[in-house]
Each structure stands twice: as structure tokens, then as C-alpha cells.
Image 1 (cartoon, rainbow, N blue to C red):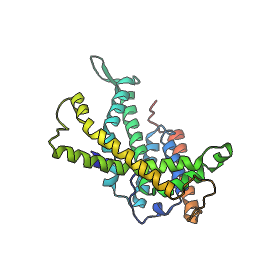
Image 2: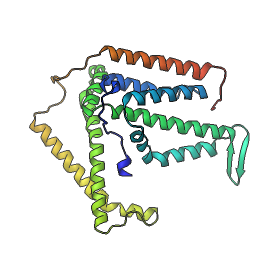
Image 3: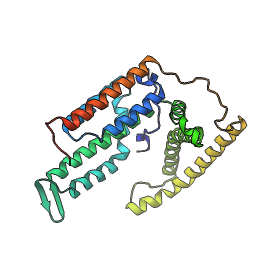
Amino acid sequence: MIRDITIGQYYPAKSVIHRLDPRVKLVATLFYLISLFLFRSISGYFIATMFLVFVIRVSRVPLSFIVRGLKPVIMLLMITVLFNLFLTRNGEVLFHAWIFTITEGGLVTAVYMAVRLIYLIIGSSLMTFTTTPNELTDGLEALLHPLNKVRVPVHEVAMMMSIALRFIPILLEETDKIMKAQIARGADLESGNMIQRAKNMVPILVPLFVSAFRRANDLAMAMEARCYRGGEGRTKMKPLRYRSRDYMAYLVMAVYVVTVVVIGRYVPLHVWIF
């Protein structure tokens, strides 16, 4: 399960998506995630699916690598589906037993909400798969730069987010090593009930926290040794510049958003969620 967590990891490949300006990818990801909640029909989901498939093909990130990142959130998806399935009481009753009732509206809502969450995870993961942490930092700092006028430490915020993303795969690898070491010493991490499994995780969490604090301290000392004093007065070796492909990407994203909103909300042939 630890190896299935792919959030924050960068997948190197030679694609147009990888070469895009990080600001374009951040803005496009934000609009795509918002667009998932702007339509309420099958036609809207069809357009969102086709757009997501197109981006995956262009990015050259293997589908197996993307799907692997969904495994850790299967439980969250199941809980969301069950809540929508049994707590939504719209439409014709399809099934009833004791306190459990499944209606037509609840079934449609559960399926649509599950698809939305899956697309949300895949869409946000594609941004990290195709963007290095340094590019993410530069992109966030550039987009949030106007907040400097109200004394928001934009550079520091972007740096913290970049470090957090960079530490995710490192800590996952460290967790995998600790678990293998504990199993080699005879620890049983899988048997027992939920409470027993939680207790078995204590020998893993303690050395993991110690390792995380040690890495954080080493990073802070390395930054101080290189005279890091924040973002004021700093220059960039590779400043961000928009190119023709970036403007084309903005145009494609604008066309997608307009299409999915118009067709997904105003075309007559609807299967409504609500």
C-alpha cells in the first residue's frame, strides 16, 4: 500500500504537458477541478472524460501509474459512495431492507460523486506527475505574487508547499524501510482487529517521526549554510516566460470549460443528479 501512494511524485517524460509553464498547469488544474462541479448531466461527464483521456495521452504518463495512485483512497471513495447511496432519498425506491433504502436519485448521485472524486484525484495528480517541485514553487510564487502587496509571505508559503511535496515520497520510502525492518524482526503488522493493528503501528510511527525531524533539521541547516534568508531580493536562474504553447494551452482549457458548462448544464437531454 505504501508503494501505491504516488501523490507528490514526478514522472519524467518528454511531452508537451511537461514542457508547459507551471503557471499554466496550476491554473488549468484549478479550472478542471472546478468544472467537475459545474455540470449535472451525462453529456458533461462524457466531455470531462474525453478531456482527461486526451491530457493523459498527451502527458505520456502510463495509465497504470495513475491508477495505482487511486488504491490508497479506495476506502474514502467507498464511504462517500455509501453515504450518498443510502442518505439520498430522491426518486423511485429500488431497494429497501430494515433501515437501508436505495432510491433512483441516490444511486445516480453515488455513481456521479464517485466519478467526480476519481477525476479530481487523477486531475490533481497529473499536475504533480508532470511538474517538478522547483517548477511548482516558481509557479505558485508567480501566481500569488500580487499578495506581496498586502504583506503575505508568498515566497515562504510556496517554499513550504514545495518542501512538503518533496518530502512525501521520501517519507513513504522511509516508512517502507521501517516496516520491512520491523517485519524482519518478527513484528506482525497485519493480523488482529482494528485496535490491535493501530497498536502495531506504534513501532513504525516513532522512528518515522524521529527520521522526519532529523531530515527537517538537516534541511534547515543546509539552507542556513547557503545563506538562505527568504524571498526578498532573490533572483532566478530560469525565470518563467510564457511561450506560444502556453497560450495555446490556455485557449484549449477555455474552450473545454465553456463547452462543458454549456453542454453539461443547458443541453436538453439531461439525467439530473439533484
